[in-house]
Length: 282
Image (tube, rainbow, N blue to C red; front, side):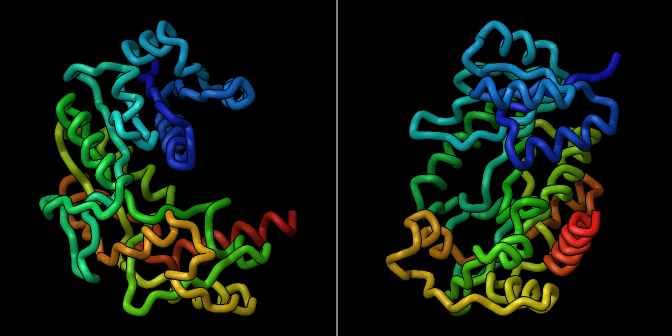
């Protein structure tokens, strides 16, 4: 009998992790709030669960060998924690958090044992949600800016929606969604209840640097510069640019024997462009 994985919140990373886990022989159950999305998941061969169906959710949680939690928390904490009421169990549990819990470090490096100094309400909620899941023996994965097929600067340049937001001296870390999935799979093989891991690539750089590389790669012009504090930008975007830091992935490499397939934005964007071009030719 195959092992079972429950994904609470089937989004960008949930889908990538599901693909990797299915390839490893797992049966996948996933929550989805809308009937339309549940129908889509069922058509893909997953067991779709309405998170409001408490009996079905409890059954899926009890039978799962592994559980991934992805939703963003609110002021009351993680909605999945409230729904599942987990006690420390003999199963792998992973909670996806954010490197936003570290706050602003003026471009300096942060590690898993760095102090948590979030500068936003979202970051403070994540700190609380992390404490909830750590109390249940989950592993916490702190994620930076995520990209991959359907969510990347290559496709935004092609369709004309890319924005060139500039803040002098600002850098951040990023991660291809496939690399996130392989790190989670590595943790499944080497679980450490209560472990905390930064998952990111090897080269934190500015958004300008990534956009310039992508434009050159595609042979497309750069969009006009927008100042990071332009009033036309959303509050969420401006809060993102408030935090300036470099994130270390050394612990994940050492403990999980994990290496990103796309160690920098260059490899990741090149692969995406190849995929986009192949799709146009098909």
